[in-house]
Length: 119
Image (cartoon, rainbow, N blue to C red):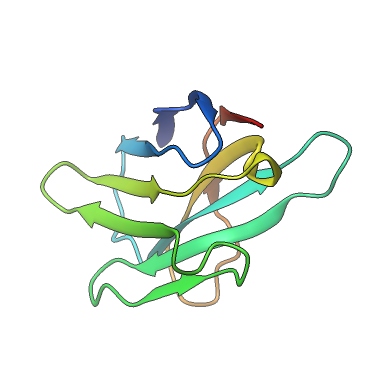
């Protein structure tokens, strides 16, 4: 059974930093892509960043470009999201996901981790 466990969320002041982790367990397939979405209270879930596992190509939402960095540790089967220069509008529950193949659209999701940025 595949499990994605996020960690690293918390409360931080505007301008601060956090690093989120997403650890994968029970994986019996090759990962094609992993990424992060977020959902603020009362809003739809929105894309944040993604990374193709083998090549390491990255994609970012315009709202986080230059502030967030997505990365991976193949040996630990873990995805990271380094978040710098945080703003109150970054406050949301952050979810990681896994795609098994290029045509996949979010095969597995984590349970989410709360990020709160105070002004």
